[in-house]
Image 1 (cartoon, rainbow, N blue to C red):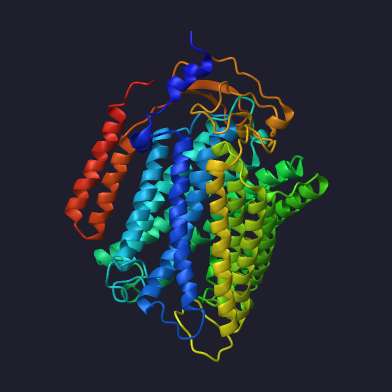
Image 2: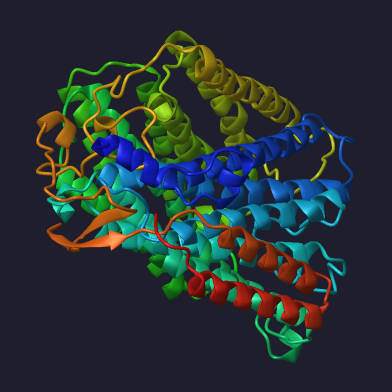
Length: 618
């Protein structure tokens, strides 16, 4: 008679080699696919940033032509937001960690999870194909009208942008739906809402934000493509359209997107801080509520980006008030993090250092954000480098630093090896100094009048020294990032074994092996606390869950056992469907609408086959 773990290994094991990765539905493998794919895009976005900074290091730069600069600048923004930060936090961190944190054996819809990755990969390749053909998006990451219309952009550049982001949003929406259902229904028995890890609250807030924020963006992009390819006039004032319609729909996505980026970072911070402070999070319920409120209030702030467009004063005052209000839940979390560290016995290892850097950069970026809530100041600094400084402190400093800290924190869990601590701490200081030197001078040069999206400038404006320091800082920052990845790569093969719980973390992922087995948990844990690993309260659920791909489902609010679910095994249908959708978007791009319709039919047939010809469960 085989032991329980042997039976589970046999049931949940996926085929090895390339075919296994192509057909996988294991949330951990999919998380790793997201991780390495987004790192490639991060590298591409970083190269684009260095090209931009090299071009602007001094007056009259000639590294990039105006056309190349527009494409590189646009793709840098699109890459960092849509192809790195969002898929890294949700696709990589969320996919890998969330089922482990809630005591589940997989995501609620494993094959939909695989499909979301392959759609993401297809959308990224689609966007970069345009850049490689020198027809990449060139109208800025928010691609304002009329710059995105045929009159001003007659090539395929704006079409790559519009169709690529529609394509990308399909992946993101599928992932968000999967997270919501997983959090609501697959929590371990006993994990009521008030016992969910704070990282899970953050992922729930992000997922709902994506569900409500992406439709306005998709609608905007569909309108743009209908105007460009079919002749509609949604944004054409001469024919009764409205140019501001683009901005309203875009920023109805764009400002919640700021919190979509920052909320997972907050969730990572609330995981790392208690572990290294050696105490539970202060004001746990308030922090959980604050994470949800950040997402909710963020939907009332989109006009914050439109103070210089001629909206009525009454409208501007409303958005200014909302811009002030959204600071409150963020401040609650900052105070909770700082009190937790000060009331605990902090151990300042590399993950906590990155969270400290995150808090410092987030406060700086937040203070400049409050300044933009003052309508006259916003109108005076709109489209200057002061704005660029603000959002880079938020998007890079406050979003990427927790990602880097999270890489160090969960590296032992994913690989079973420890990273090199001294090198990790050195990489933090190089990265932190590089970040400050790159982005802080942008405040000053912005106040001196340097506008955004200029590809070169003349000498004598007083901008030269600041731009040179920004470029030097960018290369220091790049060196710091390379130190991080070199450390992780070396440690993956040479680092000492970590054991299952090297940091004595409080949440459930630290109760299983490192790296986790395919089935995650030999027995499903029973939860009685938000920090079950510290309370040692998890116990065996008296259920025979070693006869197939099974995981328990629980009630939404209280986490009581509801039913046992059969989970699907590996499948090739997700990648086949993603390939059909990719060809569909290529045909739409080239205006082969009949062929596009054919491939839409092919995608429909694949979807039907996916559900009709389900293979037998293991």
